[in-house]
Every structure is written in C-alpha cells, then in structure tokens.
Length: 225
Length: 225
DNA sequence: AGAATTAAGATAGTATACAGTATTTAAAAA
DNA sequence: TTTTTAAATACTGTATACTATCTTAATTCT
Image (tube, rainbow over all chains, first blue to last red):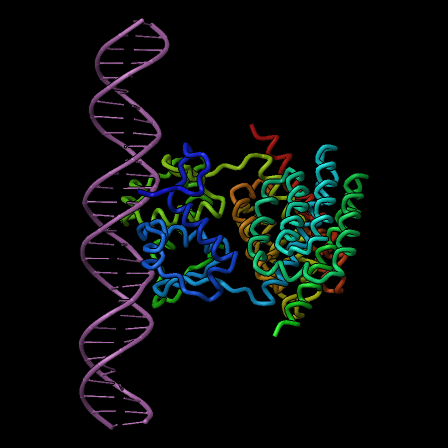
C-alpha cells in the first residue's frame, strides 16, 4: 500500500508522519515549497497518498522546527524569514560555533583532527569547481566534524536546527569568487586552534568566522532586487 | 511562569492540542508526571476528557521540546535527564547567557535597567524568606528581563526551551544558605556591566555566573543518595 | 523446571466521518 | 456601481473506527 522510499533498511519501520515530515521539510528547504505558500491538509494528503492524520502530525513537528507557521483554524503556511530573523539566528550561531570550537579544542581526537583536515582540503578542491551547492555541503561537513567532536548532544541538536532554518539562505554566501581565500584562512585558523588545543583562541576565531559570514550574507541580501 | 500560549482573553480560541500540551508540560515540570513514566494515549484521553487525536498531537510537540521520548509503536514516556544531559544544557546556557547579557548591554533601555534592579532587590528580599520555589521564580524573572531586552527572539526561544528542560532540576541550586551572598554579588556584576554598557564584561560575568551555578548543581547531584 | 510458542489483550498507527468555523461567492439592498 | 447580507464551499478541529504490532501470559515442548 505504502512504499517507504526513504527507508534503505526495509526492516526498520518509519511512521508515516516521519515520512511526511521528511518529505515536506525537504520540499521546503529545496524551495519546492516557497515561503508563504499555504499547506492544505487535504491537498497534501491526496498528493502524498496518505490520510490527513500523519499530515497533521508532521505539520506540528515542522512548526516546532520553525519551518511552518500554524494559525488555529486557518491553516499552515511555509514560514519566511525576515532579514532580522536571519541576523538573530546568525548571532546565535556565532555564540554556539564559538562554544563548539572551544569544546572541540578540548575533546577532538587526533583521528578526528585528521578527518577535519581532509574535509578542509576537499572543500578547497570543490571550491575550484564553482559548484555552489557542493561548496555549501562541503562547508557543512567541515563544521559537522567539529560539532560531532564536542560531545555535547544538545549543542549538536540546536546547531542542526539553526542550520536548517538558514539552509534556504546559505547559498548567498559562497557565490563570490573572492571568498575562497578568506574562508581558507579562517578555517585554517580554526584547525590550528584545535590542533594546538587552545580553546580561547578557537572560540575567538570561530566567532569571527561567523561574524564575517553574517556580514557577507547581509550584503548579498541588500544587493538583491 | 508557565504563561506561553496561555490566553487570558476568553474570546480567543485555544485548540485542544494546546490545552493538552500545556497541561502535560505543566504536569511534567512540576513532577506530577515522573521521569520514565509511560504516557498512554487512551489513558490520557480518558483522564483529560478528550479524544486521542489532540493527545497525540500534543505528544509530538512535547517530543520536540525534549520533555517526552516517543518510540514508534511502543509509546511515549517522560524523558529523564542524565547528569551528562544536565551538564550539556548548562554548557549551552553558559554560552547563551553570555550572549544575552552582551546584547542587553547594548540594547537595554534605562527603564528596563530600573526594572532589572528592582527585580534584583525583590529577589534578595525573597531570599530571606527561604521559600525555594519563590527564589527560583525570582531568579528566572531576573534573567527573563535581561533576555527580553536582547531583542533576539530566537535567543529567547531557545533559552526558554533550555530552561524548561532544566526546570525540574533547578531547585537543587538555591537551597544552601551560603548562596545568597554569591548570587547577589554576581547579579550585581551583571547589572553593573549592563548599566555601564560594557558588553565584553557582561558576557564574561554572565558566563561565570552559569559556571558557578553548574558546579553547584553538580555537587548537589553527587550528594544525593 | 525452563525455554519456546502461541494466543489474547493492550496499545499505537492510520483512515475516515462529522462538526464547526473561516472564506469565498452570489445575491440583495443601498 | 458599491456595500451588505446570505448562502455555499473549503477548510481545520475532533472523535471514532479499524488495523497492525507489541506485550504479556498461558501453554506446550524439551
């Protein structure tokens, strides 16, 4: 009746609400569902071939992820982020990336440091290609390695959520060709701080990294139109 | 305290799922529902006099608030926090309180500073009474004023969530009589930083405040039998 | 007796039905 | 025409019914 195309392991059971949740989230993040677009339960149910029940539960989950807005008796719509929202989230990211690198300075294993360096090298390679999507992915990968080394699961959870919120706007950053040199230098600083186990330094450069990122994004936003 | 979507205006409509959500959250935070306790949909539905539908939706929401754990086809149970979870959350709070006070140094109005001072004075008064619940509330109020002055809604949202997670464990802190002097001094430092508009100082003392808090809580936890 | 098996009950997953409320459309009045 | 009102429609909110699975306890087998 229902085929679980998201399940690689056919043994594992994934409730429909989670399938719907993943589907809708993906659609929102990739822009197939645009900010402001209404999400009607019947329509979604029909399109996805399920009843309204899992749709509704998925919508509640998306609401707490800040991806959709739910107005009682009116319905759901894809949430848009104002410029201020983006600034706010980046402000948070600044603090949390700083914490993340600080913890990574203390906790990252030598193996993981190697992995981090490799990720950095890969990313620089990809930068040559000019494929913005892949660049963004490589950047996320780099930061993922750091966060996973912090050992703080709550931090990982929150930063993931912030990243999801920013996902739709992240491409603005890496477009300009001059970026490579700056990002390379900043990432190198981060790697050095971690390798030399200097938490205060790591915290500082991570913060500056996000701050630079923020300013860049704001510029791109204002340049639009 | 728990004033979230609470509606004073009786005209405004609150979906049952939100009523259930508030009810269950309150029950969890006040310990009426203990960590580890199973939450069965039928049972809750009957007890609250509603159908399973709003119960299920409320449980999904509680899951994303990290208050209950949902295992597919098994059910929900009140989530317990390990000592490590508590440390992780406090580590996050350290970074976010630091950010909060830093922003408050920049954005807090003179009026709000007066309110903050009053809240501090009130708190010191309440400390004399020895009523731990009220002390905790007064402390939350003090920090609330700061966060509301940051102007960063996302920060407010996340710190609220972290606080909710810690709510059940917060009383451990204020019990010992020696606390008053230390907390008074630390809060004074925070107030001074904000009043004199020194973000770097505010950030520093806020971080130290949480760090002290953390160490205290850990001590209490280990002392428990 | 202890382990394995099966059957019964409990519980979550999903679909559907119905009720109530916004929204839209059409009609009537100004 | 423009505004008001009324009816129709399209939603969401909630309850309930049905199904699939998990748990528990009884039963059988070794």
